[in-house]
Image (cartoon, rainbow, N blue to C red; front, side):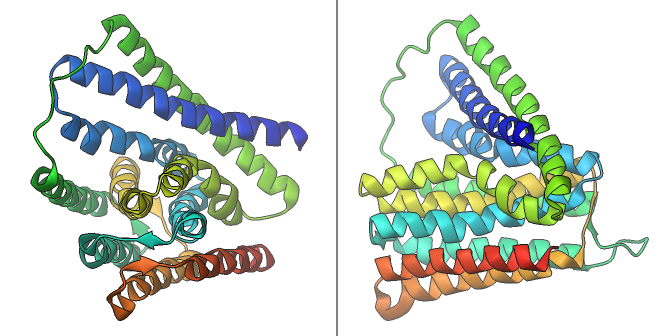
Length: 318
C-alpha cells in the first residue's frame, strides 16, 4: 500500500511537470514562428492545464476503468468549484467581472447540462454512454467557446509588443518530448496505482476518481488560483476555475469520447446534480444585490460543503 501511495504521488508530480514542460516548449516553439501570445494562451497553455485530466482519462477509458473517467471529470470540476474557489475566496473576497458572472458562469452550467443530457440519451444499442457523435458535438461547442474567448481577449488586449528571443530550437523540442513522456508515464502511474489503492482500501474506483485523482489532476488550477488570490487578482482566480471546468467538460470529454466511447453509470447522477447546483449557487451569490463578489463567509461555506460531500461519497461507497 505504501508503495502505491509513493508511486501515485510520483505519477501526479510527473503529470504536473510534464504539462509544464510541454507548455513551455510548445510556447517557445510557437513564439519562434511568430505565433501571437494570444493564440498560444488559447491553445497551448489551455491544453496544458487540461493535459493531466486528458491523459489519465485516456488511459481509463481504454482499459475498462470507465468509472474513473467520469469520476475524474466530475470530481475535478467539483474540486475546482468548492475547494479551489473556496480557498481563493477565503484568502481574498473575490470581486468578479460582469462578463464572467453573466456569460462564462452560465456557459459552465450549460456545459454541465449538455454532457448530462448526452449520457442520458440512450445509444442505438440502448446503453448510456458518451459516443463519438457526442464527442464531435462537445468539441464543436469547445471551438465556439474558444472563439468567444478570442473575441473577448481581442477586444480588451492592447497591441502586443515584439517577441523576445525564443531560445535554441533543440531545447524547445527537448522540453516538448520530456513533457509528452512525463504525461504518458505519469498518467499510467496515476491510473494503475489508484486502481490498486481502491482495491486495497475496499473503495470503489468511482470514489478514488472523484477524490484522490480529481484533486491531483487539479493541482495546476489550485496553484494558479491561490497565487492569483494572494496577488489580489480575483478575475484570474475565478476565470481559471470557470474556464477549467468548461475545458474538462467540452475538450477532455469530447476528445476522449471521440477516441473511445465511454459507458456511463447512473451512480454519477448525484455528482452531476452537485456540480450543477454549485454552479447555480455561485451565480446567485455573485448577482445578489448586484455585488458581483464572493465573500469570505461564502467561500468558507463552499469548503464546508465539500467536506460533507466527501464524507457522503466515502460512506456511500459508489
